[in-house]
Length: 135
Image (cartoon, rainbow, N blue to C red; front, side, top):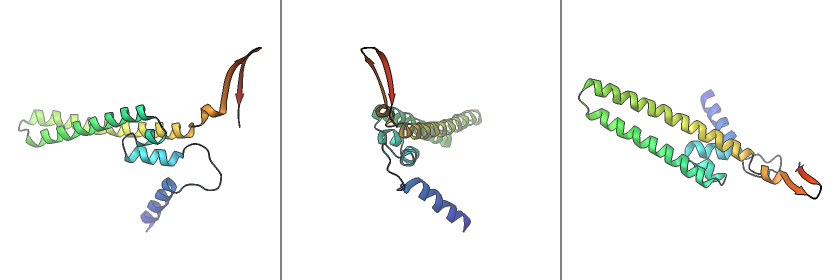
């Protein structure tokens, strides 16, 4: 029962938007969830299409290499090559986990700072350089 309750709370935290205040920009929870579920999804949500494509290609390539190593592992007869292939596959699984963690953290930070350029105004006037912060 406690596991079900924790699961429901986790899902509601990730997917239920907060209506207590009006927020400009992007929702960090949606960006993070999309990034975890879909390779590059959080970056596309944050309108960072090139970064999303690069992350999707990196995660897709890693998944493909995991698949190829696993397929090779099933047909290999030599114990030495099986051990080497198994180590390569396990290293690729760790790499995929690191890519997903990086992607989700990047999506979270990008969503949090989405409208940052609108809040900072930097320019040059007649009497010098100015910086204005909008709160």
